[in-house]
Image 1: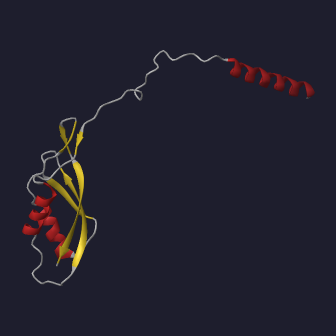
Image 2 (image 1 turned 60 degrees about the vertical axis):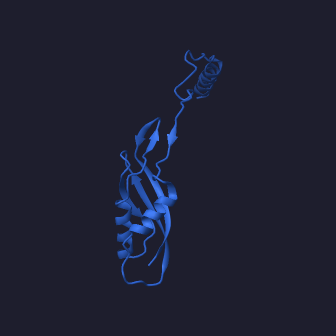
Image 3 (image 1 turned 90 degrees about the horizontal axis):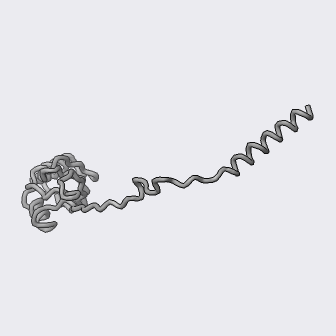
Length: 136
């Protein structure tokens, strides 16, 4: 039994000594794909005429319900602008009520085309968050 323990200790010492005595071999290819700097040019999607023109479009074209409740609400909406500049998705992140939500969705889906987002000069789909106040 004592001899077996001694043999195990000797084998362990030899293994550990072998691991620590190995020399590091330099990498023949020191640059990896993560060491390369890539230049990326990005441009966000924009509404033609800017934010003021977008607010003017929404306030002029929204078809809110006729019955006024004398209320106002801040609305947060996520839209997707596709590669052609069209609004392809509308998701209300804050809901007002069924009629007002539908009016907001309709006016945003009917927007004129945006200038799409671009990455390295190529149009890409992008998400935009729009926040505005609705009086109903």
